Length: 296
Image 1 (cartoon, rainbow, N blue to C red):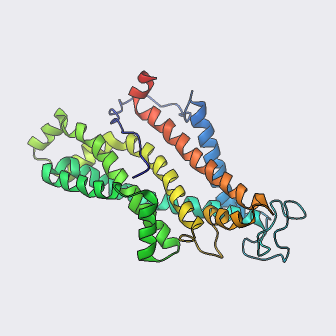
Image 2 (cartoon, helix red, strand yellow; image 1 turned 180 degrees about the vertical axis):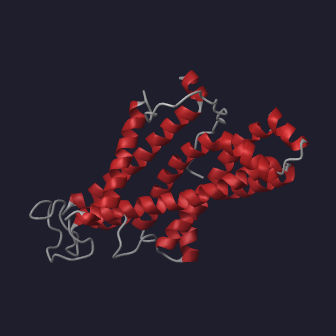
Image 3 (cartoon, rainbow, N blue to C red; image 1 turned 90 degrees about the vertical axis):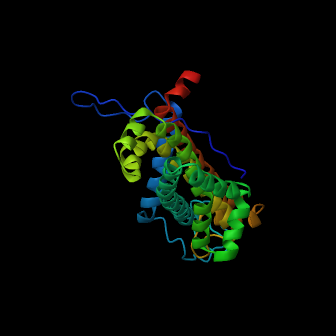
């Protein structure tokens, strides 16, 4: 697969603190992480609350086709006379919601499968690893195109493609983080005491892989946005009259010489969204993996 993720180091169990805890400042001393968090909050706020602002309808035509920015339309209009600003706001919401929703589902399945692979023994572990290897052997967008051929173009195909690509990565990351935990003495003692696999997973594995999973989710969402954007750009994802950032770039590329903002603005917004999630993911890894600080 053409996209790789850094291998995780399992987070150490958190030591209990005495007394009342002070309010925690997110990413204190990490300017890049705080910038990414600010950018992420801003984009999510625009996507969620932008439609409530008086910016017009994303589907209603004004009759003024390919109008330049200004002239009553902050970012101009598209080839059908629809204002680009509300369509970009809709695209932000569509892209982030698809990627985030699917990745959260893939995370639940991937965490359970990865922990089960670490606990189940050699045969089951090898079976799960080989299954993920098969998926990793295909390029990301080839998987996306194959899914769209089976499911047909549309939002469901984009969601299925994001799930198919992010799930095996989550399984491998969680498995790699869980294997060292399984070998620790407290897990062995719990097994000898007769603890079930579900109890081992819930009590001992999940708390120790939680930090790795949280950081990986941010990376997976950024990958999911790229997959959804790429599929919509090719016409295989979100279909008109709905808009995603990728479909806006795909439509706008035909009019680059007439109205460059049509394609460039949604493309820049998609890039900023991916950057925000990656910066937040990096910051989360630095907070949950103390070895990164020592290596720096």
